[in-house]
Length: 330
Ligand SMILES: Cc1cc2nc3c(=O)[nH]c(=O)nc-3n(C[C@H](O)[C@H](O)[C@H](O)COP(=O)(O)OP(=O)(O)OC[C@H]3O[C@@H](n4cnc5c(N)ncnc54)[C@H](O)[C@@H]3O)c2cc1C
Ligand code: SF4
Image 1 (cartoon, rainbow, N blue to C red):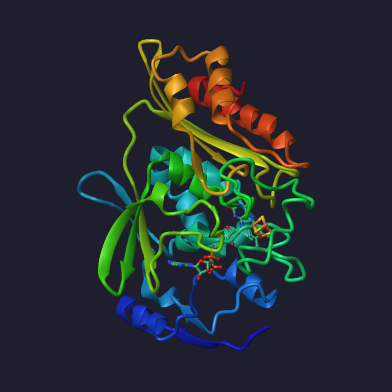
Image 2: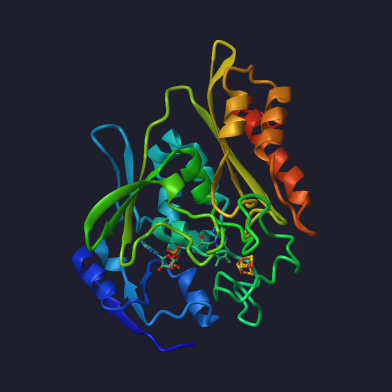
């Protein structure tokens, strides 16, 4: 493990200037990803900037009805916030399906968005990994790729984005607020994570020195139903093999609004507009849900060990839609 310097900021300006002081700096939030990866020598920041004292812990309703979630809000506080649970149950369900109670008590909103892949070859420095060491190759392509992605993949990297919360943010059309040396800017959540392409080491749209300060979600129309379904090897303390977050509004026997996002099968939180188009204007029926699920997985590119994820993800989508539509599992 490489030596690093530690600093603790009490204001945003201080955090940003400490970060500027080193090109190899990392913000320390809950530490549940970062500390593991530093110990494994996968991440080697020269400077660690502790952001616990910045505040950024508020969950507040804005005058226009949107909700602003500070980036240091703990996953457990967000999951159990009474009004957020009522307005955005899909977000709470996704958060509570992740990790363990102890981890959720430490993990933060910003850290969850920025968490790194769980690809075992990325986490073990013995193996070649383009994400960890650009140009070194990808051990997963012809390795044991059971947990890897089938959507958004490239010849350079097939690692999944591991977050549950981010799948809910994708389906809720969240927006991120970023603060950097040049001031504040906002970015649609869907544009934050990047596809691996030929540069899998570039995972997000944060500019050097920028920090995530908040995520904002807009209210859903009255009567909107939602659901998060997560399928995994065991029922708790496990990442998704496939997951689906859906938002559905039915009026006059027809679906007039539908949103679908996938987790566990793609290289970034994965919205599926084509599946949403299948649903809009159709009756909320099992056949329609299955067609939408098939559409969601069109173009999937499996490797030797992960083809099973395609059917698993289809079932997650169909089940999430049926649950949202009826309140009853399919
Ligand atoms: C055993 C285990 C099981 C898990 N299971 C799941 C699961 O099932 N589902 C799931 O979704 N997650 C799971 N996780 C991951 C967990 O949710 C993340 O580790 C956590 O959300 C990261 O948040 P953190 O605050 O601890 O981030 P940290 O570890 O502090 O930081 C993570 C990264 O984000 C950067 N960062 C942090 N905050 C900011 C910010 N505000 N702006 C810019 N950069 C920032 C850091 O520099 C670092 O690179 C699991 C983790 C473990 C260890
Ligand atoms: S899939 Fe991506 S993270 Fe995993 S070994 Fe290949 S390049 Fe590295």
